Figure (spheres, one colour):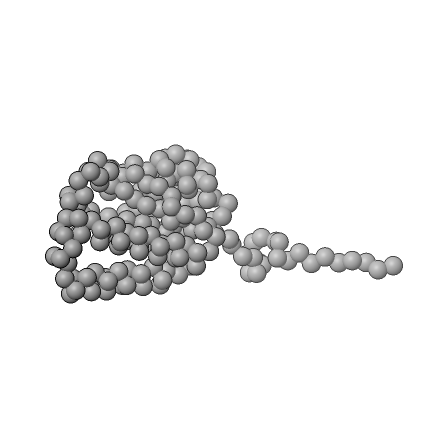
Length: 184
């Protein structure tokens, strides 16, 4: 008689088994300032804010902790804001796969960042950094095109010079390179 031996090393968890792969989800979120939403009919008014990736992280950290208590405290170390683009106002957040729903729920409760009223919405949930980057690049392009249309309406087509357009394209390319350089 033959005996079958099953080796399930890949399914064991713990530091003694370094082959275990920790699966993650990537959230791409848009952060709209409440003042922008109120002034949507008047796009000429543009409010600049000094929000950075660390501010987004701190706000998510605070909301997760306050809304989910002890359960939330357990996942705080695993939340990582990998990118925040202040121009397009998008953030890439890496979280463990099994905690994705907790963090998405917490993000809906997020009402202010650095004392600035905000509305946060999830644009995409990705299983890999590659697909998250693709979604972020798409959002950057859309943001660039929307701003371009807004400038055309505001100033007229003839007022945008080739030099100004080239500078905007170079800036967009630099922002896109920042997204491409995000690491796991």
